[in-house]
Length: 258
Image (tube, rainbow, N blue to C red):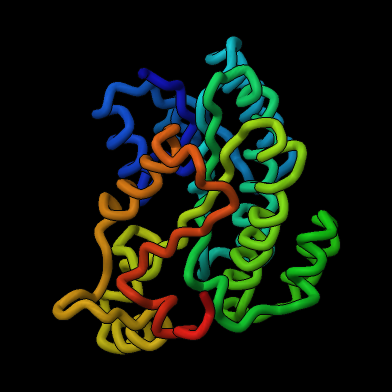
């Protein structure tokens, strides 16, 4: 059945690939991004998030069937913005659009995490995110190095939030399937800077090792296939799962965790 699906970060990368895959399958896609989307909004700010909700509601007053929080940024974007978009923007997208999801007979929600969530992260920053202390979290991020662990911290916090929220009364208890996808190395505008140099490629191979021969990264469309699956009732018994689409990275890092 045709679904109405909101996709943030829809103008590029995995968000664009996901939007295109869903549209090709006949679904109505409401894209959200800073530009070149049906809804133009800045998810780094509370005002931008509220503007996103108002615009989506105007476009889909009868509700939406799926919400996919793809929008994310990484260094060299300033650390506070990384945290504001990746954690607070993603969580706000899902929570603020939840009332529209409740109007669907088969609601689904998906958040894009990252294998970076498994790497070194700052516990104080993650705690501030989970406490929903945005001002405090951004202040902590302000004092961190540009290429520090704010990205890993923001994605770790999002993963923890998702796991707990998915089985809560507000989500699973209300019939909304909330799951996540954790990509590993994916060639997008956000990561192409790393693949452009030998040093960058060596760094990516270290932080996102891949077990598949001859593979160095995924194409956004490969990740979009899994995201699109979770955005439909096809996975109607999946709740609170984070699916690693990473060429084996997560299994390499922690083979004993099941």
